[in-house]
Figure 1 (cartoon, helix red, strand yellow):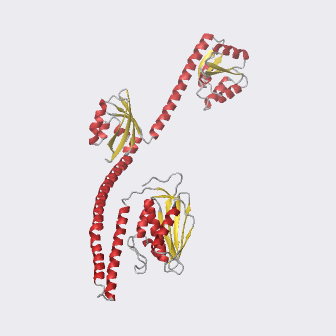
Figure 2 (figure 1 turned 60 degrees about the vertical axis):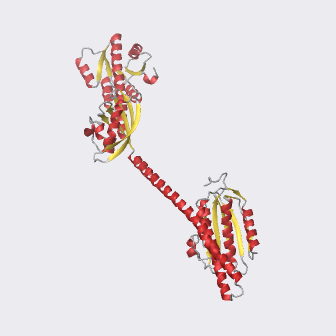
Length: 502
């Protein structure tokens, strides 16, 4: 037996010989014997240690046994310690009555009979230890009851055959609204939504010791809640734990509805894409044919009748050919814009200076540049080669176009790296724009300058914005009228690994 499990006996007597005799009589491996030579020492020991039994001499100097017993009985820590008086006054009845009044449970008479002493001490220690064990169990039960009733989940016992509720915690009332007297003895089946009753009744035939299921239960106000049950079966009883999952079920239903709505939208989008592809085919073939005819016949007419055409007629033919060519360019841009949403983005590491230099060379080859172009640092980027080429081509072409009327056109191109993204910019000293209308820059057919002043279809920047967005970046612009503009665009930076390709 561990030391903490041993019974502790306190012997109190003012004579050392009596203490020694009692100690030798009672000592064994399952006990701890404590000794006190007077009442004050006895009280000090009893208050400082856990004592199971006190054997107390009645007649002691300064403080007799009755006084010690009275103090022990009036103190909360010691009031439950059983006391056996040891007395030589066998014949004095009033001594025994006084002892019992002070809390004694028994008497030992001197001279002590060893067998009687052992028997009485054994019995009273056994009773005291059983009492302590019972108190510990009661305390444990009270704690368990507090834990069970403090649980947000329903905890209870249900008969496995009749489904009658035998025990239930306070959460049942909190969640469903029923009072104890309304539920105890009631079959759980009566509280279930009708559609769930048949499945619940089938559970009586299952043989598993552990199982779980979900049911809908009527609350007292006839609203419905979902409960998730976990059951342990013992001795034809269900020991249940039920959790309110109504919010979870509602969320699942909402997700299911959203998924259904999304599937419907996807189906609509697929249909729209097919229609768009059909429209693109129509634009590409049916609309191009009359444009080609218009441009071709105008050229033939001009060549065959050049000698009879006056200057006004030649100007009108030139306008027809120019507008046919412009319409063709507009159709090409619209087709490019519509294809962007379906074109896969295939990213790879790109050397930005090479792309920019190639674009400058191509533009310069078709029309010699007047602008001075300054190159700052251009970081490596990670993008789709063909798509990012369109971005640079459009922005650089715009910078050249809108600064061409300046006496000394200047363009600056560069970039900077941050922790998560790379920012590029293209700056010019050209026509600029009013920042009040900056939000219109990237819309389809939105132009801040007259087409007679600067050529264009009004789709280029919309294409740029869509390409940047598909790469996970952003684009913005700053400008002042007649003082130039600067366009900034960002792309996710290579940080070990880039985002997955879209």
